[in-house]
Amino acid sequence: MKGRLFGVGVGPGDPELLTLKALRVLQQVDVIAYFTRKGKLGHARAIVGPHLSGFHHEEPLVYPLTTEISARDPRYAAALDAFYTQSEARLRTHLEAGRSVAILSEGDPLFFGSYMHLHVRLHDDYETQVIPGITAMSASWAAMKRPFCQGQEVVSVLPGTLADEQLARHLERSDAIVIMKVGRHLARIRQLLDRLQLIDDAQYIEYCGQPSERCVPLSQLAPDDAAPYLSLILVPGARALSAAGTVANEVTG
Image 1 (cartoon, rainbow, N blue to C red):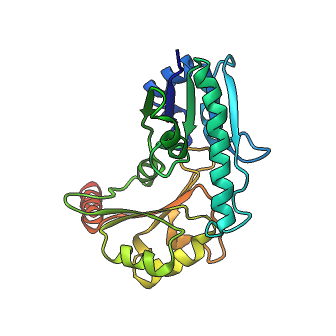
Image 2: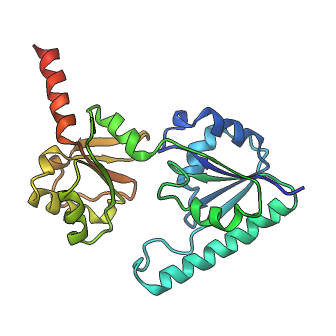
């Protein structure tokens, strides 16, 4: 019999934010696969580390490149396509041998996750189950400890890699905003939010759910501050901010 494929969301970073279903699957599968950079353990693998017993076969899927060349360079797309093809072949070997395979994914597997590239290649040929995970954005507004959106407010989730004019267009027509993939784009995103008069309400979060978590108003960052890849910016909606002010007044009053 062929093996089963699992896409397992492991959450944003805190091992205690792993769901019970994800934990059960990880304790039962034969093979654990995870994406990583050369010479690194991998963020998703580090999250589940405290829950592993050591009897699994592990398949580290090592990215051929990360930031060495621009994502817009044709060589980038070609290298990643070859990488996913090779990764697919490695996992097919296990699945054809009847071994169950869990592919780890930071946050949620089908939300900005590398898992989806293997899912579309494998799910037609094997029984597949996707285990949803807590996203970095939901963990971040929990860390922010303020309402994020309310009522009929529209939420936009934007990659910080968008060009300024694209970002500005989405920012101007949204109520509550999540900007992901901040990283080296922090300075220009900050300038854009300042120009659109959104910076005073924006919150910056990095390494959410990890011991090094940092959650501060974006306006408090120095102009030359650097942001890691695992960082995002939240801009709460106006109604949510109003509700937060009401609660604060009730508490202090």
